[in-house]
Length: 428
Image (cartoon, rainbow, N blue to C red):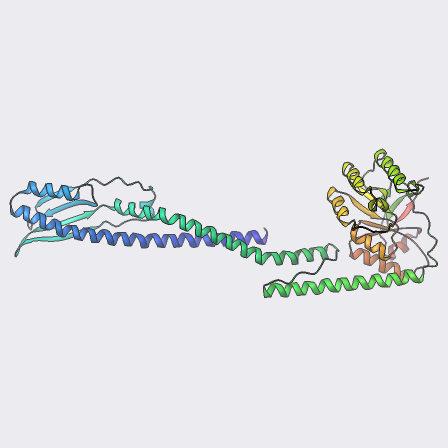
């Protein structure tokens, strides 16, 4: 489970639990307040009722007393009235029907009301006429409580919604810097050189950002140091490397066994005889539509097409094809925005890239950064020391790129120099 989801579920659960506890506490407080009010009403009623009954019974007219009681309390908040004389005989008793109030059935179970009862003696001077008992209806309390709940529910819901929005905003504010750190670490684990992490607001996360940025800077520094050293070696041996053999077409086998790593489908010379960019595009278009490649096979494409007016047409042509390996040949001059975005589109389409004729030049590394290829192909030269090849291959491996070589069949030497594969066969 993602940390953001876990934190969100935890905070939402705590918020809902807190809301339920607070709602329960508020309901109990409101119930106690309603009960106090009902008790006060019953005490007022028992006083006035005592005076009514006292006058009626002293005057000897119980019918008048019952009429007055019905007029005052029938359908009200009084449930029952009971008058008992000193001998225990019931002098007067009256039960009133409970008023119909629309409240949920769960409310009496969730917030119970205690029965409200008030007693008062009725006297005539020093003589005790009897004990008057009044019991209140709990339905009135539930009706008042339900009305209060309905009024407060909207406020509570709005408060919970605002609290949730604030919690999600806080989570984003905390987790976005962490995601940036994770993305950089994942990029370095995937043999890429990410950009530095922007400093976060939180002190602890800022310390983590600084640590990751130091790792990124050190990785970049080592990478640039290796590139410069390789470039000096190439420049020193430039006179001996001026003559290059033509790019071969064949099968590249792993230096650790007979596993085929990569196979070219077409010869690079297929496009070399074209005079201008229009003829080159026409030749490539005919070739692409007329050939197919199996798994692990790569079809060569001139990089000149990426910096030509046919760039969009090339992308549309590749969209219609079956994704596979693309081997890019040539080194055109870039006088327009970099093709990095196009390579990202091709990667999303499922294409993998091979960069041919890699020579550790600045231009080669620039194309390497844009393309992020799976393989690079370089030509073997005995003029370069073994340290050069080891440093080149280790540097490329640190970027997640495999190295294929042609021009040498010494398997043990290629394995010792950290090459992944070498050309072992060429078609006739």
